[in-house]
Length: 317
Image 1 (cartoon, helix red, strand yellow):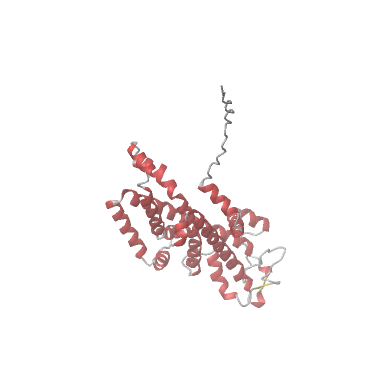
Image 2: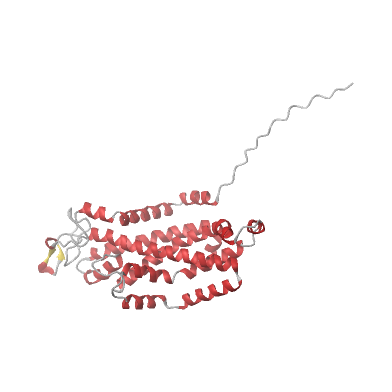
């Protein structure tokens, strides 16, 4: 009688199935591989630190942005800074302004505070308003979509720069920083709204959204728990692309003389004032221009990288 050999005990096949990484973890990993992103983050972090610690940094330098140092300029040469490179010395780390002798380092760091505050606050207004309008238009559709789309078209049809100049010119006894932030933010939200609306239209009939709706979840819960996380990636990517435009807009308005007014420093205002001295003191023009250029470039490179990773379809359109 043939006895079949007992089957060997089945080894518990431990399948170590790798848990798929989340999109955010993949994004962080991909961003960490790019040298341009690392450099951009370092530059952005540097200027954000300068803006946040402006009073501390100017006190370490020994000058406030409004202190005059007449000993640092030559009154017989039209107020030209004494010393090489615009008066750079141990007392004035980036030199001084012509005629006034105000410390350029103190004014640059305080200008970073003003310029970045306006740009970041206006961007926050644009992103919040645009995301709310885009989600509402895409999810509810119908009359809500039609009304919000017409309002968006109306806002985009305005010649925004001319309107900003007119508004800032007629406003006299108001807080210029608050007004500029509100005016800049007023015209930026339609672009974000269109991006979010398109993403919401593709999400509102997904299985998990339909399941939440059948399960009795209200519109607010569906929008905040299911739709908003789905549009977060493109919104974050486009936010970093909006910030450079906001910084440039603030600088342009200040350059044209309708933005932040003296003695409050801003990079655009400093560039406008330095035009008269670029022959005799080029460093007065170069330093704020370099700060503005590096900040805009860093945010642009960072935004391009985030868009390529978080919203690849948007990078091809």
